[in-house]
Image 1 (cartoon, helix red, strand yellow):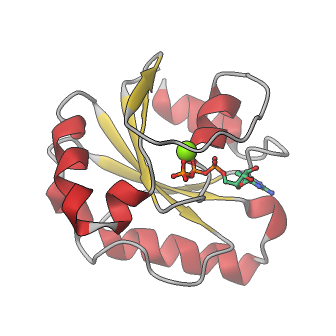
Image 2 (tube, rainbow, N blue to C red):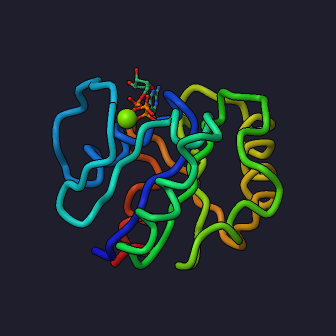
Length: 141
Ligand SMILES: Nc1nc2c(ncn2[C@@H]2O[C@H](COP(=O)(O)OP(=O)(O)OP(=O)(O)O)[C@@H](O)[C@H]2O)c(=O)[nH]1
Ligand SMILES: [Mg+2]
């Protein structure tokens, strides 16, 4: 699997997706700092949400081949600045999370937010049901 950086707001499902991608049990664990598990670099949502921390995301992105921006389908607010992908050196893709507990309209809105952030490609997943995980694994292979 490619070396990837997970970026998204607090609670959007980054760590849960990492666990699902690794075939591990899904256990809630608040991410408090940037860490690497295998080829996946996970980040705290605060690094996106608090301007003071944003530079840490850019530095981390130099270590990876692909930035994965995540947006929860259950969150109506825009969490990324428009054009945010230009902040990173590597290419970016978007992933809508929590599709198991969202309506099609909510999933579309989250996808629109990711495209506004600058990604050209959006996948949809549920770490809980496993929907979309095979397609994501294939994309990251
Ligand atoms: N129903 C559902 N819940 C999910 C899914 N992914 C994550 N969750 C839940 O959302 C909550 C937050 O998930 P995390 O993976 O910890 O979120 P995070 O983005 O790592 O959050 P921070 O570490 O705070 O930045 C947990 O209670 C998860 O169980 C999903 O696909 N479906
Ligand atoms: Mg986390």
